[in-house]
Length: 300
Image (tube, rainbow, N blue to C red; front, side, top):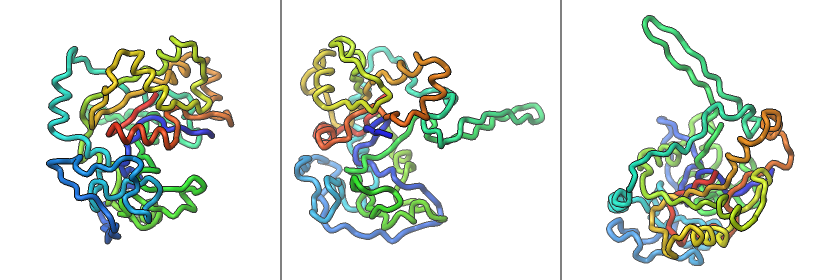
């Protein structure tokens, strides 16, 4: 299966572990880190070309950029001041749901995942909803492995050296073993909270306007040149991004999927050429995201 950076990706956010209340770890120390000051977070800010801070770190890893013990990664771009400033830009006060229905897929796009099981459990004067699902049935949250610390292109999660963000986890067994660590994990994002200014780049609308045709199911890659062109087409200023922005890329995937027949939706996950459309998983994409100091990117 071909892959691009898709769905919600947190730039340099360590979301590569699960949590467990009974598994404290002795954290292996990293050697080099930036003198991070929360009051002046971009003092001595490294450029993308200056990553990693130490040659012993994985290629382009952001280890130490927010200090040796940091567990938030690019969520550090989110500050109280940034959230307040984002609120000043609200015009309509309209809430937009970005989720797909949990039962949206006849067959999960990854057919190894079980479909949603929803039942009602009646009680005396009440009824409970019971939902059993794979948490990656529709949308998912993930870290940028190349920036947060993970696997080289020829490694897999079973044979990798398992170098995790800030070297806070020593090996993969501490992630998937019987007592997984709580040092890193999605709970770190929950504790921090993700709120801020969302910026929509309508790639699908721009592509249609310039007669670019593509299949959203073939691993089509969106590059930074595309996104800069989309921003210009939408009339955004050249300096449209602000630190902590949450980037939303409309790829047209959902529209193309919903236009399939029920039969084609059923067999799509079994297509050996099926790919995940999104930003190119490339050095160029990572540099573009890093320099803009985005905290999250969602495509779909």
